[in-house]
Amino acid sequence: MSLPQPIGRQKDVLCLPAQGHFAVLGTAGSGKTTLAILRAAFLASPKTEHGGKTLLVTFNKALVTYLRHIQDHKLANVTIENYHTFARGYLNYRNKMSSYAILDPDSRENLIKQAIQKNSQNHPLHPLFNYPVELFSEELRWMAQYGINTYAEYQNFCNLKTHFQLEDQELVFEIYQTYLNLRQQNGKKYDWDDIATAVADELDVDKSERLYKHIIIDEGQDFSPEMLRSLTKAIPPNDSLTFFGDVAQQIYGHRISWRDAGLNIKQVWEFKENYRNTKQIAKLALAISKMSYFRGVPDLVEPVTPPADGPLPTIVKFDSTDQEISFAAKQAITLAKTQNVAILFRSRQDEKLIQKYLPRESIRLHRDMTWQAGPGIRYGTYHSAKGLEFDAVILPFCNNEKLPDSDLIKAFGEADANAQDGRLLYVGVTRARTSLIITYCDILTNLMPNDISLYERLKR
Image (cartoon, rainbow, N blue to C red; front, side, top):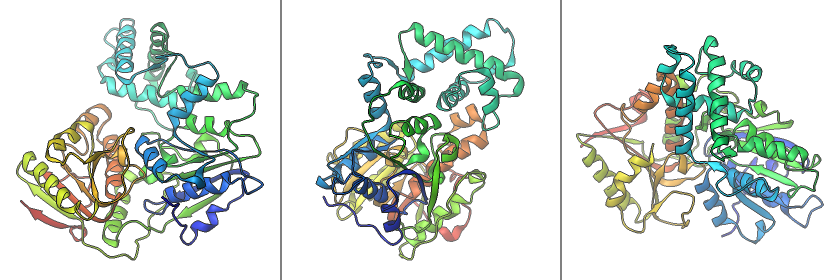
């Protein structure tokens, strides 16, 4: 498959200097992934003075599969990986990665519960221990993603984000230390959140020649500050790192801009043009980006409505979940005769509900999938669709019970739940090129704009 062609101002970014750090911020549909691919090909080309081994790294494993699908001889000097594959490979090269060294998510949750229980024995009746374990889990994840090692650092970073009151923070940090001790006792060096710190620390003492001259980060808004910090150290000082991102699509909870990772950005390029969505879909995405849960997002690039015309997004109400799933499957099967169709869900659990209704050749979006171009059905989560695009997108279960998720509200409060799931919804909507169908039972999610001119509404 041949490489995509740059459009308009994209050509200027393609040939940015091959030295230094650069940030390219764009709205969904502005061609950031296309630019990342072309930038990688330009920097890796052996026909140029700056040509050298280049890493194209992203967070989403399904996106890696897509990128590898379009990789051809023009990207022969480019390695395409998701961040954690890069991290494990480097630590293994440095003899810092033994078998089963990384704690899996379920075991991590259990150790956090043990840490909470152990600390609660020293503080009987303290109200802090009435909070759900998910709240502690998210706080500890955030601490690891920012590379926080001391209580003083925790206090300094708490002005960015914390779920806990000032008087509780010392005890929360004690729980974090207890968790780390328990993890070590269980023979686990890392979890998926602090492995980036291990990479950065190892690169500090690694004086050998760097494997890569250039690094391209795609969907960079999903990277933690520690991931970005480690990647800046994985190239020689005089070579290049290019960050492509859209903070409006941020879905992993870091709430960061590239500045938070200390990147030495020489120039920021902003792309507001939307080359993917029709005018109608882009108008809905723009309305979502203006919702209250997007307020305060740093470096947000407001999308510009594209000229391409199309049908209004359709919202369909049903009396039962079974009717909703059956409709989504039938619509997908019909559209897939001539189009590339995606059915997207908030969770893997919801995704499983539709599998039995779909043709066997339907492709589930996941890290080990085989990518096929052309018409057909893909299905998966909002997360797994990051960076991808489809002719038609169907979004089931857009009701107030699912979006925002009730467990998320219980753990983090309504405001944070709206912020997290609102951005997920933005991702789902902006995957669609020409056709968007949203379905629900009972009450439509309050994460959708109230403007009735944005949709065609139906009742089944």
